[in-house]
Amino acid sequence: MKLRSSSVRHLQRICTPAGPKLSPSKTRYWTTEPCRRGQHVQRTKRNYATVSAADLQFGQPVHETHPHLLKAGEVTPGITAEEYANRRAKLAARLPDNGIAILASSDLKYRSGAVFYEFHQEPNFLYLTGFNEPEAVAVIQKVESSNDYVFHLFLRPKDAKAEQWDGARSGEQAALDVFNADESGDINNLHKLLPPLISAASEVYTDIAKCSGFGLFFRDQDAPPNDFQKMIKDSKVKALKPLMHEIRVIKSEAEITNMRMAGKISGRAFTDAMRRQWTKEKDLGAFLDYEFKTGGCEATAYIPVIAGGRNALSIHYVRNNDVLQDNDFVLVDAGGEYGGYIADITRTWPVSGKFTDPQKDLYEAILRVQRTSISLCRESANMTLDKIHQVTEHGLKDALKQLGFNMSGNALDILFPHHVGHYIGLDVHDCSGYPRSTYLRAGHCVTVEPGIYVPDDDRWPEPFRGMGIRIEDSVCVQDDAPLILTTEAVKEVVDIEALRD
Image (cartoon, rainbow, N blue to C red; front, side, top):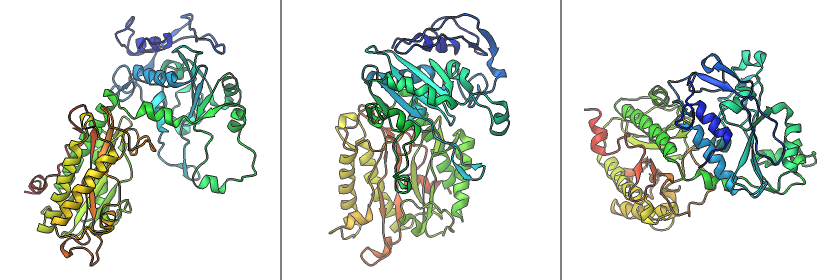
């Protein structure tokens, strides 16, 4: 792709091969000409100053301040400025002539008073910008019928008093010089900044105006619309989500590398956990959290399931506050996050470290089915997640019959109540709503997670009652073979038992 002048400016600054090489320890701030609506942004090289970026403070790590976390050229771990520019270009190419896309960052959510939850950026916003602060809006503005676009980033300005309390902000100049925006502005002036862009747009693609869940139930239906809804009421508005799904669902090599790193770190943590004897679910969960983060992940990917014994019969058991019994299984569904990308792993193993005969029989039956299902995660197999689910159901049904289960009626719906897989990436359930009926292509990343959950009642063979077993790996679809991203988490019976020898 031929990058725009602003992209080249930024990519040169961070020492990519194109153009003159600038010192990686320096940030060059450039003056800008104001953007006239419908015209390409032009910048001149007048009156710039060279400032040591290492002496500045930003709202997130950059290479100059955190070279141990980011390489030269990266905006977020593993993802370069060029890749972010390419992503915006892909979105712009899908917009109509003079169309715009408007995205908002996540809000900071408060637990009580001034006590806030850990911030997690809105995935589509992060995917296009690499910007990881709250209170920001991005606008991708397609320039007429060309393949060019203008990237506007409106964000919190630098504020010494606020930053004393809440930490550094990147500010408007960094929007241009670090995040490669064409135009930046103070988010507090959004009521002035957005209307000209909206009024000039042929169509507006956004998901901001929607209200869902309990918010829709409790919202005062007689209340006037909010400011943004007023701004777009006379515009042709379309959902942005379908366009973003098309762009996000096929992963780049850099994204796959990040997910492989998350899988490697997380998988090793699982294996280390299996080596030890645990007596409490919460202690096992704390160990995994520690291992994920000290191993190199920046966070846990989701609230883990640490389910001993019959607790595993609840698919999303997350209380994690029970005692573990030696004669039970423990089912652990957890993963770490690296560079914003997640690993999703489930392993089930005996608390004692040694399988009983019934535990081994049921476990190996599920594992055989999982191997078959994973083998179908290749483009050449011409499969969808729904088709793989059907193959998984048939495999589990046959395996359970051989173990003495009566599989008539709704038996499989009770024993295997969830789908075998979902898409993964920046989210645990990535591109939520993207059809599982889509044929898998190279670059799709999915989970494969067959499970059997046997209720404690007379309908089922007595040796297996109360067992909950799930085996899950994160997998990247390739042309002729699957790439298992989480292979470091052992799952063969002989390997699990050998960890305690």
